[in-house]
Length: 157
Image 1 (cartoon, rainbow, N blue to C red):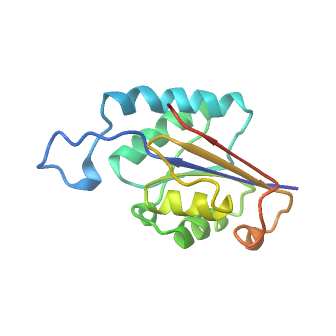
Image 2: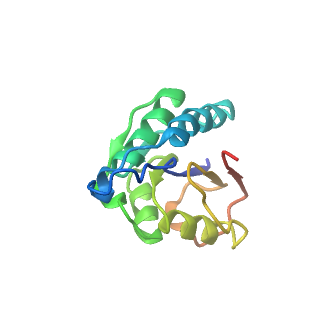
């Protein structure tokens, strides 16, 4: 059995309304375009999450909904993913008990976790980037302690 973890940073958000709280910022035009495109690319790989978890922020939730549509699944909103550091991201994924998990959240946590899991080979997670990791084991305790057997980074640009 294997564990697969997909990290997707939310798509590009709109900074046009300075009166909005950070949590409430929507996607901008590029984000609205990129999210379904990146979702279709992930779906084409055959990946189907058992759990798709998202930050409650509007930009993350909207991005996650695009992925859920392409992957034929539902989104579970997790408030702790908003601004989460890598340990919280990993704990949240492992607590699902699922072997195929997708998280949609924010930098810097997503980039830091992707960097750690890739041995520093992923240096950046631009908006709507998708990092996919696979371990040849079914023990979440090893994720982060053992290098994945494969990983891949896909970006919208």
